[in-house]
Amino acid sequence: MLDEIASALQRALAEVAGAWEVEGDPVTAELRASQRPDQGDFFSSAALELAPRAGRKPREVAQAVAERLQLPPTVERVEVAGPGFLNFFLGRAWLEDALRRCLEEGSEYGRCADGAGERVQVEFVSANPVGPLHVGNVRGGPFGDVLASLLAFTGHEVEREYYVNDSTDNTQYRLFGASLRLRYLQELGEEVEYPEDHYRAEYIQEWARELVQEHGEALRDVPDDPEGYVRFADLLLPRVLEQIQGDLRDLGIEYDVWFSERALHASGAVQREVERLLATGSAYEREGAVWLRTTEYGDDEDRVLIRSGGAAPTYIASDCAYAQDKLARGFERLIYVLGPDHAGYVPRMQATFGAMGVPLDHVELILSQIVRFLRHGEPVRLSKRKGQVIMLRELLDEIGRDATRFHFLTRSMDAHMDFDIELAKQHSEENPVYYVQYAHTRTCGIFRRAEERGFSFAAEGLDLALLAHPAELAVLRKIADFPAEVLAAARQRAPHRLTTFARDLARLAHQFYGPCKVLDPEAPELSAARLALVQGVQAVLATTCRLLGIAAPERM
Image 1: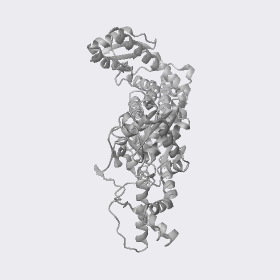
Image 2: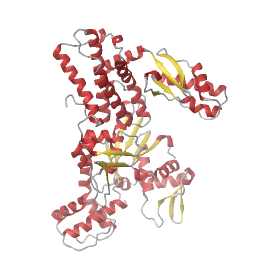
Image 3: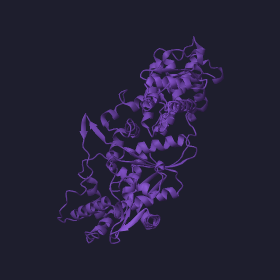
Image 4: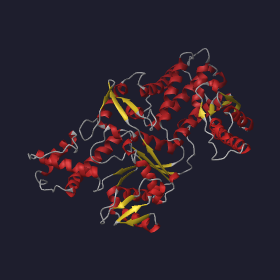
């Protein structure tokens, strides 16, 4: 239904633009759910976007568009409001049909085939394997996981992937090994200087002690050079990956593929990709080095693939080979979820993909912003090297998986956020995840009481027209909005819309219980309709929680 309205709006916008000879790309007919009933069920600001290009007043544009709209019968009327918004009012039948669909489809309500089988790979977290995950590098974890769930729920074929940066040329990996080597020597009693730029977290010392226990003095003569550093790092790599995998699993994240950068090199894929780029003219040789023509795609300089003298390939070469590998596996869309430390890297990656010949509309680079962690209102400063850090494991042990995931997902990825650890621990309405889960628990409690008192309902005998109280209509409208909200969250890569939706539905449900007695023996038909509404709330909250990867408890 929403797509029908959007299509009708797109056609009307095109007719108006054509009549007024507006040049340029067409304005997108985007619809959003209204927050107030007097502003309709959905609204569009498309007329405000078209107006400056048409040289007309927004309300004039909105009126012209409204006059050309050929809408489905579910729309009762369209109003031009404010500076030029188009408000769409849907009929009561739409609300009732939506609830009936929800009751019939249950956990499948909201699912659609928008992706039509498109193969999508979502790569996220992919932190360097230089220690356990800390809270500063996992914001993309819940985001990537929920985005993958949303894409699957809307018809895409999705794989989750973690890229293990275990190349022997990885600077951080070598520094990790160098740090381990020095701490190992200190554990053996040697007086060695420990540079300021080395990792200082406590786990480095713990692992160094374990190396002493396992190998004694056998590693004392490992050379103080890059090969020696990699040797030390390799000794801990299985342990590091096992801990990362375990922590992410406890965060509710299971990957389909763990991809090794080193294996990419060992297979010859990096060299083959460099040779392909040279053969196609996308790369060239100069001063003994191989360069990628990234300036032709907006980069400030061409990027080196192979350093002069036949040195090892750069990380840009690895990125090219990795992208080719993904495409060879049949993925039609590549989504990279990157941390805030990659801000300057995004334009470079876009230029790299362009130079490779990868269509840029098949690649998405999603950058997260910084998270500030608070305790009692005071910021917690994080520095993995200096040892001032909260590990993901500590956060999970303190506040649990559900609170961790939900709080990370309360803001858009392009917005800075404050993560209040003390708030996340509370079992009160101030804690949003508790508030949402309690709303689901409350619906379960109502059905337990209904069973005890002999209340029930049959879908075919429901008189939903009895749901006339404003609080009931608000809940009905929210349930009806759910499929469109899921679709918008998937298309806009905006999982935070689900946490907002869940809180809104929970609030409306709690408000509904006050004036509307659900189990009333003197009004059995009204009780049946209200029980159906409660079941709708329960189904939508359960599905939302499932997509968010959190529990929908029956008791709390």
